Length: 179
Image (tube, rainbow, N blue to C red; front, side):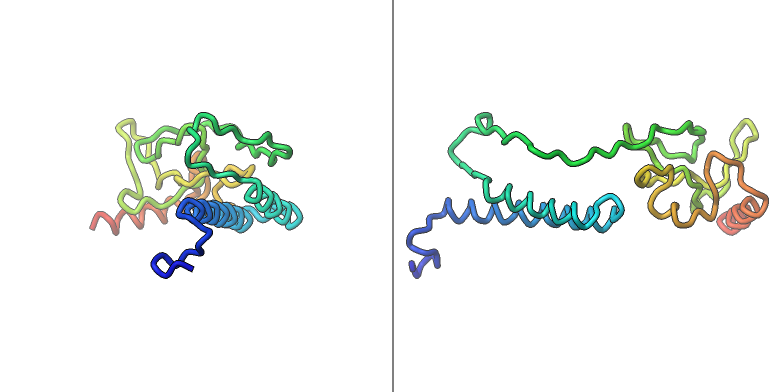
């Protein structure tokens, strides 16, 4: 053992770097898989989760890190098993209002109404009244709502006129904000 570097004599810096990179990649892949399992438990059953861990272990065992090869010459191994592709539902028609966020291209957003703390009630020049704003979170799975609004959607959908109780709730909040 070299007392100056604390590395075994048969290990050089490149081997150490390769090991660190390999460990970094593996830990990030496992963390991503674990987070996916936590967020989408119904889409990733235990058997599939365990198989994905095995696939990551196989990938890491076969991974070659070559510092001298130009990036263009590195070609990935052909994939033998592809993960299922989850396609989001088509975007729903939306009401354009000054309080509605612009949807991100290709990512549909939740259709729930939320309380806009700065402007709970908006009045447009044409006399139309907008209560709250549309939720900005991405939809969850095959739903039109985000993860939070699947469980509880107290203000209803933004595209549907609110009931009198909700309108009163928003007007009350607007009067507090104005004062």
